[in-house]
Length: 337
Image 1 (cartoon, rainbow, N blue to C red):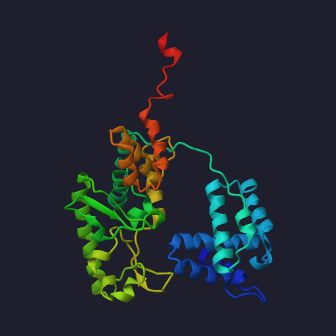
Image 2: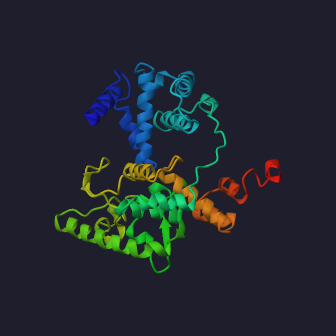
Image 3: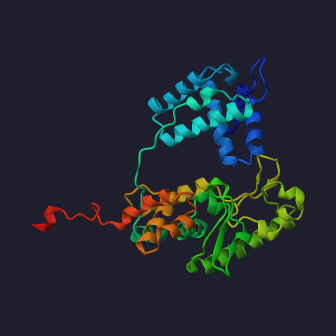
């Protein structure tokens, strides 16, 4: 029902009389040409749709800086969105004007960027991590252990291919992480046997798909056109495939995608409630906890930066608060009484 409603909204947005037809399809095509992720593409389409409906279905070509600023102000003042959400909306609209409508005007650079207030990340203690993991099982437990054990982002973990896991070197290669960069992180010894057993079951599932005439997997950068056999090769399969096949929205091909990120997010939230953790817990909190515990164990900041894939060491520096005891290592006068 929701999907049909969304398609109806898309068709209304795209049906501007006397204007370029199918605006949202142009946006999708431009995003794919620039190799944006499907999640980014969907987010951009959604923000453009909201922008158009906020301004009573006026075409973006008839609007400019004031309309964009009014929309962004509405998001902050009336919808109370976070600065990161507001900036994502701004990025979507600037992408629409610059890349789709080919509008390059000075006012595009004058749109005010929402400022982030510095916040310390939520970090679990080792005992809290154990309590969380004790409430999980199966594939969700394995994914969560991988997040905490390697510090990878959720989508980096779910996008892993079989070929990217090197058991002999105890390494995991993260392909096209944030910023499109590749990097190498460790494979924890405690995950070797569980991950091998898991991949054994995944291989059986892949062989069953092949026997039934399926078994293709999405390949990046038109690799499927260069190598017809690659999409069915074992090495290119997802480490964490979905339990069901689905139709790829980008090509209409029926195949098995990786586990949906919302499934992991829901499993982590449920486990946190069962463990009675009072801190807000999400999969990304495990990345914060990995970095913090790494520094607590004596590893240097550059090592943490490389494993996390941060471009600037200043981003990693936020975790150095753990090197101080509470209150920046200042002893309270109360403790001296």
